[in-house]
Amino acid sequence: MTPIVIDIEASGFGRGSYPVEVGLVLPDGARHCYLITPARHWRHWDEEAEKIHGITREALSSYGRSLHDVASRLNALLGKKTAYSDAWSFDMSWLGKLYDAAGIRQTFRVADIIGLIDEEQRSRWHAVKQQVVEELGLHRHRASGDARILQETWRRISRHAAQISG
Image 1: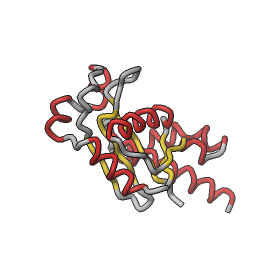
Image 2: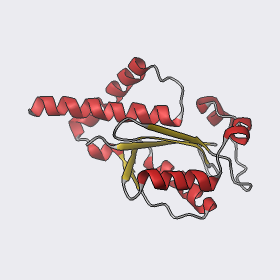
Image 3: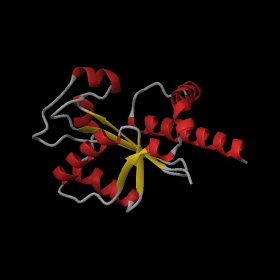
Image 4: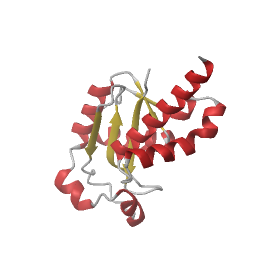
Protein backbone atom coordinates (compact mmCIF):
# COMPACT_ATOMS: atom_id res chain seq x y z
CA MET A 1 0.00 0.00 0.00
CA THR A 2 1.31 3.42 -0.93
CA PRO A 3 2.04 5.49 2.19
CA ILE A 4 0.53 8.84 3.09
CA VAL A 5 3.38 11.35 2.98
CA ILE A 6 3.46 14.65 4.86
CA ASP A 7 5.88 17.58 4.64
CA ILE A 8 6.07 20.84 6.56
CA GLU A 9 7.73 24.13 5.68
CA ALA A 10 8.70 26.28 8.63
CA SER A 11 9.63 29.82 9.59
CA GLY A 12 13.18 28.71 10.29
CA PHE A 13 15.37 25.84 11.31
CA GLY A 14 16.06 26.35 14.98
CA ARG A 15 14.46 27.01 18.31
CA GLY A 16 11.37 29.16 18.04
CA SER A 17 10.57 28.12 14.47
CA TYR A 18 6.99 27.18 13.63
CA PRO A 19 5.03 25.67 10.73
CA VAL A 20 4.05 27.96 7.86
CA GLU A 21 2.79 25.34 5.39
CA VAL A 22 1.76 21.71 5.60
CA GLY A 23 1.25 19.46 2.60
CA LEU A 24 0.39 15.83 2.21
CA VAL A 25 -0.23 13.27 -0.48
CA LEU A 26 -2.72 10.46 0.07
CA PRO A 27 -2.26 6.92 -1.30
CA ASP A 28 -4.43 7.75 -4.35
CA GLY A 29 -2.18 10.72 -5.19
CA ALA A 30 -4.61 13.40 -3.94
CA ARG A 31 -2.63 16.39 -2.68
CA HIS A 32 -3.61 18.76 0.11
CA CYS A 33 -1.68 21.87 1.04
CA TYR A 34 -2.38 24.61 3.58
CA LEU A 35 -0.63 27.86 4.37
CA ILE A 36 -0.87 28.58 8.09
CA THR A 37 -1.58 31.95 9.70
CA PRO A 38 0.94 32.11 12.57
CA ALA A 39 -0.18 32.35 16.18
CA ARG A 40 0.31 35.86 17.60
CA HIS A 41 3.15 34.71 19.86
CA TRP A 42 5.03 33.03 17.00
CA ARG A 43 7.61 35.67 16.10
CA HIS A 44 10.69 33.79 14.81
CA TRP A 45 11.41 34.42 11.13
CA ASP A 46 14.49 33.25 9.25
CA GLU A 47 15.22 34.98 5.93
CA GLU A 48 17.20 31.91 4.77
CA ALA A 49 14.18 29.65 5.30
CA GLU A 50 12.04 32.10 3.33
CA LYS A 51 14.56 31.99 0.47
CA ILE A 52 14.27 28.19 0.38
CA HIS A 53 10.48 27.82 0.44
CA GLY A 54 9.53 31.23 -0.96
CA ILE A 55 6.68 31.77 1.49
CA THR A 56 6.53 35.34 2.76
CA ARG A 57 4.93 36.67 5.93
CA GLU A 58 2.60 38.64 3.67
CA ALA A 59 1.45 35.45 1.92
CA LEU A 60 0.68 33.89 5.30
CA SER A 61 -1.32 36.97 6.33
CA SER A 62 -3.23 37.05 3.05
CA TYR A 63 -3.74 33.36 2.30
CA GLY A 64 -3.03 31.47 5.51
CA ARG A 65 -5.72 29.41 7.20
CA SER A 66 -6.32 29.54 10.93
CA LEU A 67 -4.46 27.13 13.21
CA HIS A 68 -7.73 25.50 14.20
CA ASP A 69 -8.82 25.05 10.58
CA VAL A 70 -5.53 23.44 9.49
CA ALA A 71 -5.36 21.14 12.53
CA SER A 72 -9.00 20.08 12.08
CA ARG A 73 -8.56 19.43 8.36
CA LEU A 74 -5.46 17.28 8.96
CA ASN A 75 -7.29 15.23 11.59
CA ALA A 76 -10.28 14.79 9.26
CA LEU A 77 -8.06 13.68 6.36
CA LEU A 78 -5.78 11.40 8.35
CA GLY A 79 -7.90 10.10 11.22
CA LYS A 80 -5.86 7.53 13.14
CA LYS A 81 -3.57 6.69 10.23
CA THR A 82 0.19 7.13 10.00
CA ALA A 83 1.71 9.74 7.71
CA TYR A 84 5.36 9.41 6.70
CA SER A 85 8.00 12.12 6.54
CA ASP A 86 11.67 12.34 5.65
CA ALA A 87 12.27 14.72 8.58
CA TRP A 88 9.84 13.35 11.14
CA SER A 89 11.58 14.74 14.22
CA PHE A 90 11.28 18.30 12.87
CA ASP A 91 7.81 17.70 11.47
CA MET A 92 6.57 16.23 14.77
CA SER A 93 7.87 19.29 16.61
CA TRP A 94 6.15 21.69 14.21
CA LEU A 95 2.91 19.69 14.27
CA GLY A 96 3.09 19.77 18.07
CA LYS A 97 3.28 23.56 17.94
CA LEU A 98 0.35 23.69 15.52
CA TYR A 99 -1.89 21.45 17.59
CA ASP A 100 -0.91 23.04 20.92
CA ALA A 101 -1.68 26.53 19.60
CA ALA A 102 -4.94 25.32 18.03
CA GLY A 103 -6.01 23.61 21.26
CA ILE A 104 -6.77 20.37 19.43
CA ARG A 105 -5.44 16.84 19.97
CA GLN A 106 -3.60 15.38 16.96
CA THR A 107 -5.23 12.08 15.96
CA PHE A 108 -2.65 10.72 13.49
CA ARG A 109 0.92 9.52 13.85
CA VAL A 110 4.01 10.62 11.94
CA ALA A 111 6.83 8.17 11.24
CA ASP A 112 10.09 8.18 9.30
CA ILE A 113 9.62 7.12 5.67
CA ILE A 114 13.07 5.53 5.74
CA GLY A 115 11.60 2.94 8.11
CA LEU A 116 9.56 1.59 5.19
CA ILE A 117 12.59 0.56 3.13
CA ASP A 118 15.53 -1.77 3.60
CA GLU A 119 19.24 -1.00 3.58
CA GLU A 120 19.71 -1.65 -0.15
CA GLN A 121 16.81 0.66 -0.97
CA ARG A 122 18.21 3.33 1.36
CA SER A 123 21.48 3.26 -0.57
CA ARG A 124 19.57 4.19 -3.75
CA TRP A 125 17.14 6.69 -2.14
CA HIS A 126 19.05 9.90 -2.95
CA ALA A 127 19.72 9.04 -6.60
CA VAL A 128 16.12 7.95 -7.22
CA LYS A 129 14.80 11.06 -5.44
CA GLN A 130 16.96 13.29 -7.65
CA GLN A 131 15.62 11.54 -10.76
CA VAL A 132 12.04 12.06 -9.52
CA VAL A 133 12.69 15.78 -8.93
CA GLU A 134 14.01 16.16 -12.48
CA GLU A 135 11.20 14.16 -14.10
CA LEU A 136 8.35 15.80 -12.17
CA GLY A 137 9.85 19.27 -12.52
CA LEU A 138 8.96 20.12 -8.92
CA HIS A 139 11.92 22.36 -8.15
CA ARG A 140 9.96 24.73 -5.90
CA HIS A 141 10.54 23.74 -2.29
CA ARG A 142 6.91 23.61 -1.13
CA ALA A 143 5.17 21.17 1.19
CA SER A 144 2.81 19.26 -1.13
CA GLY A 145 5.41 19.12 -3.92
CA ASP A 146 8.02 17.76 -1.53
CA ALA A 147 5.52 15.19 -0.21
CA ARG A 148 4.76 14.15 -3.82
CA ILE A 149 8.47 13.72 -4.54
CA LEU A 150 8.93 11.55 -1.43
CA GLN A 151 5.91 9.39 -2.23
CA GLU A 152 7.02 8.84 -5.84
CA THR A 153 10.57 8.05 -4.69
CA TRP A 154 9.17 5.43 -2.30
CA ARG A 155 6.95 4.03 -5.08
CA ARG A 156 9.84 3.61 -7.51
CA ILE A 157 12.16 2.07 -4.96
CA SER A 158 9.44 -0.33 -3.79
CA ARG A 159 8.47 -1.27 -7.35
CA HIS A 160 12.12 -1.98 -8.20
CA ALA A 161 12.47 -4.21 -5.10
CA ALA A 162 9.27 -6.10 -6.04
CA GLN A 163 10.56 -6.69 -9.60
CA ILE A 164 13.85 -8.08 -8.28
CA SER A 165 12.20 -10.43 -5.77
CA GLY A 166 9.31 -11.38 -8.09
